[in-house]
Image (tube, rainbow, N blue to C red; front, side, top):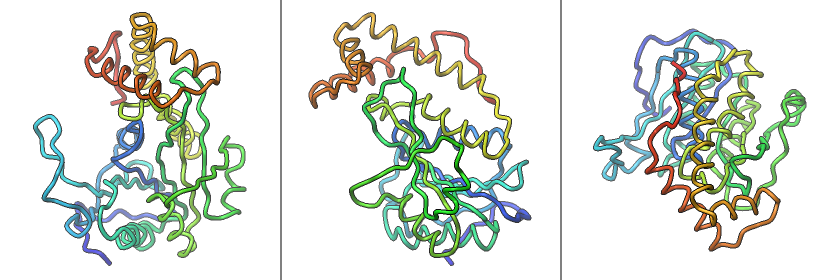
Length: 280
């Protein structure tokens, strides 16, 4: 097993569910969902995977003048049947890294099922409803999750990290599902808060978490107000979004202009136009 760093006393877990989220994610979905869940269950980290073999430590990211080292952390909290794994996606030796995640899941957490989250870029708008697409590694598990409004996802292309993790989990007899909410493409580099709420609502229903969405709803309303202001100030941006709302595709150049316009506006606009609370 890959070397682990123990951060506190090992929790006593039986038949836990593991939720996996990645830091590099469209619409900043993974960080938003994981942070919300961690705060709600008052999560405390108990293991980390040593990053040396899996990440290029010579080129760490710097955000707001703070060095951001890779993190691969297991946490649990007041809800003892829930384990959360937050991590950067491995750069090297992906199979070894993912098997290390499953080693912890099996041997320390006695995990009974796996949930991974990742956003999929879509031509939807921030005003539209979002589908929650899903890929399962076991038919029986898919049947058990009927009624949660999950839609089967088809994908052509190289396997994503979550796909590989599901495949490895299947080989160990761990049922799993990869959740892929639709992310508005022009929010891909920003937070797609509505997509995050869709995933959190699924977990809220599945695990009976009684999540408080007050803070998140205020953030969504705030983002919608900013984008409404942008549409009033910029008729071209408004035209692009109205076109998408009518179900008509934009060409490549129009998509790029819309994404750039939204990103630049949200980055320079004050953090909040309305009073907002957080989910503390």
